[in-house]
Length: 352
Image 1: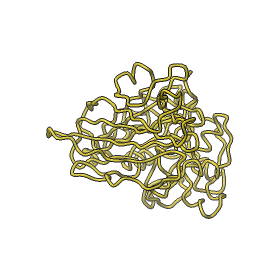
Image 2: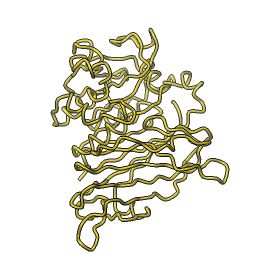
Image 3: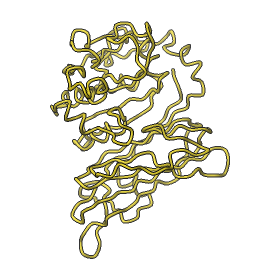
Image 4: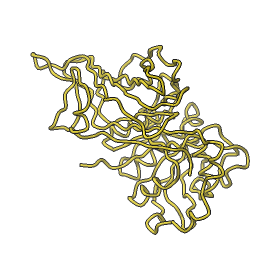
């Protein structure tokens, strides 16, 4: 087993009834949060939802928030989070990121404090967090348009035993606990990131993996189009986990980012027929069968598990399906994944 991890999803009117809403309402017809309308029946230009104080199950060292919704042209959001450790003092509000179809790319300056630091799409703690709360500000340039949110997922992890993780990965009895429904290989169409335009091919592993998952679920889009949709202009990357989940959400999927401590949550998704995207990192000789010698950060798609519990993957880091449709040794891939971050992006058909 790896780090301690937990997550929750808020996606019902009951869940959102615990939030403080300013110029934002819950639209029961469309089951989403959106900007309220003024007396002229036009949307307010901005509003804010603030979560209640959330108590973690254990002290956490990393926190990530993802959401699904809709963002018409000229609308966007700003996501901020505040944390507290053992002391009675709350940190300042950290602006983690901005998302939406808006020309403004300049972000706020509250990226680091005595308590934590923003790392692209995560908040990394300097002190162990025990409580947190977040707020999301919605904006619209047009009185006829509103951004909306229908789901929020928060996940946090504690890596304090990171030195022990390698020893703890895959205890000797793991092979005896493999459930029959986990032994499955989903027929996810393979794509290579290397066939894309040279300006993006070397860094398009995440949108390529996402495009494969979407294609499998019935949404066939060019990889370049997916890459354009997930582009993070603030950090200059295609690999922002939250952006990729939000983009899939705009296409109608339930997609979120979650820290995991083992492959078990992914096995459960495979059993349901859902491939999962994971983030890995490994050195030379540490991942047999990989088309890469090493990487400081790479995204692949897990499509199944064989009878030994080894993950079957689509790895976009090669031109050929023969080398990209690959089986990795479970111990090696779990080490490359869990000791890196344990982050996974789930892309599932939306629940009605």
